[in-house]
Image (cartoon, rainbow, N blue to C red; front, top):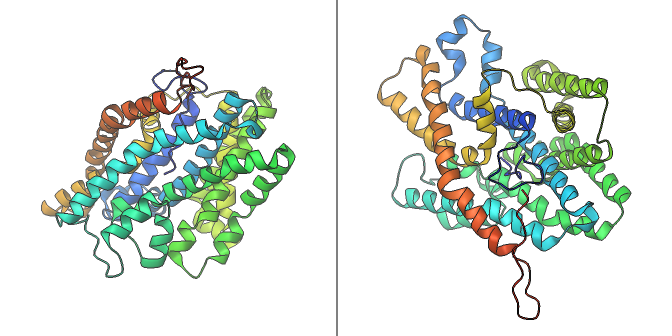
Length: 395
């Protein structure tokens, strides 16, 4: 999952005002990722739920994790570009130092901690965390994870253990954001930048089709993921130029977004023969539509869905840590010789544990480290030997 900036708009990370709609969308996406990784090991269609729900629906609940990551890509592009527009007025005036400092502070603490923990578990020979492929090694996996090319490494050598594997999306997102401010500053003209972004966004179906010979690389190549991020950036630019859509326009955006998202995620088996990889373009366009609508008029969260917003707020931390819970719960399920018909009950154990672990990671690692790093990396330069006050953290 891409570690997007906060859904807070122009305020400090520990403030409480958030965009409820974007949090709900992020929460839905991370739940689908967790369902995917649980479903690969405890399929819902083999449980007693199949007696009351259609198996195709249970399968879609289990196997939309990849699509959910692309929704995260769109959200990431939308939030980071939107925050840059509010902070600097236009993308052509991005402060590269501040931009990179914020990305570094948000991403590196959790990434380093995860790589250290996974390295220790590999060296200890812990099952589910040991790199066993003959053409893979721990040093090379560490270089791939920290060098932002773990997706390419897996495309060349095969899948890494699950907790390493989740870092493929981080590689795509951060390579995009290394080049993003450079492109913004070099083009200088919004029309040129927007044209480039549109071409990249529309390339999604074609780049995936070209990569059809390698299943792993087709899923995890840079360009398809970057196309989804570009869609989010386009959405932020459109929202900035269209700050006050009418109520009818907002309803239309919500309708297209919801219908498109449901169609691409639930109706894939009917749409893929018709649209092929165009289904992914429908998915990203629908997510962009929902984000624009949410920014214009955040929805009132349905009663009882507060937990989903909480998941959205912790989506980065849950994404990086949830496989520890998945492996543990699946191990317990197998040790207990679990009846597949009651496998869905193990989801009820895994979900709160994923949230609790994500909350602990945020409280004790990501949030304090991010504040500490920003306070130092974003400190204003000294003038005539006198230190100026640190810049205010705004996201």
